[in-house]
Amino acid sequence: MSALIDRTAAIGPKSILCFAVVRNERALLPAFLDHYRGLGVDHFLIVDNDSEDGSAEFMGQQPDLSLWHRPGCYRDARFGMDWLTFLQMRYGHGHWCVTVDADEFLIYPDWDRRGLWDLTRYLDGKGIDGMGALMLDLYPKGPLDQPEAPEDAPITTRLPWFDAGPYRSRTIAPRRNRLVQGGVRERVFFQDDPARGPTLNKLPLIRWNWRHVYVNSTHSMLPPAMNDLYDGPGDPRLSGVLLHAKFLPQIVARSADELSRRQHFNDPDAYRDYHERLMRAPVLWHSQSQRYEGWQQLCNLKLMFGGDWLADSA
Image 1 (cartoon, rainbow, N blue to C red):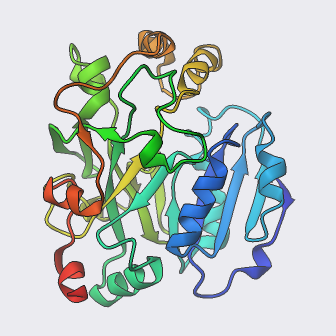
Image 2 (image 1 turned 90 degrees about the horizontal axis):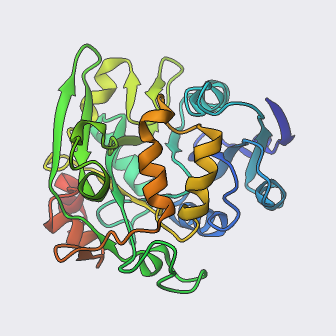
Image 3 (image 1 turned 30 degrees about the vertical axis):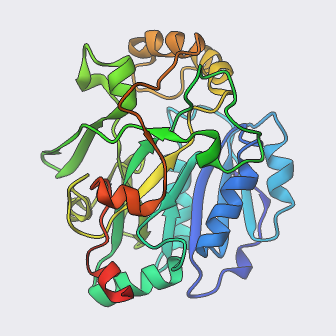
């Protein structure tokens, strides 16, 4: 892995860091960077996996971003986790770290008034080393290849709908990692075999320690006690939501690319039908779809919780 732009000397002892692997995300990067800067991220540490759309050039112009280039197989690197683990070990120890994909926008109760500095100070005061989140797929009302709003509109305007449920969670031995499944992708693509549906729980915000490592994307961690931070929807502890902007119109072309690259599942052949159906630009909306209205709505639906964090802000 080679450094293209190394600005890590700017990282201070209390800097909040954001780690991500990016490939061909030029269209999303401005919104992604603006969102996390608005939350209070001080420095971005990004690995570019052979982007061909100008992503690397754009990121190289960002003054608060350090950039590495890593060619090769994303899947063989544990879906990029090996690359990020190297950076987290070197730069993350002792810092609050956000680890997300470029299409994941972290929110939490009161996020529009209190940023990550306030949130992490609260967690430090409680002796809590991280916060879990539900990955909530957002989608348009019409076919996936038809834009619902201009490209410069907010993500929740371009993709204003989501499934409020059902979601279910179970604990997997021996690491005690949680497995949350359900939602729109299960409803549309995996209703005949729900066990194949995507894992929707993540641990995106962690006070990093060199003993930590993500095991399966950001869905689970070691040591096992880290997985006890979040039980999924219904957990009354403070939690967040990752607004997932997967279903923008470019998903159709991306699905065709994935059929040839075979990088996003341990067994790509088992998910060939999934990508083929995405290429046909289906409609995900149904009569029970909910229009996104804000974090209060997600708390009311018990998709995330505020706990004492909200009580402290009253």
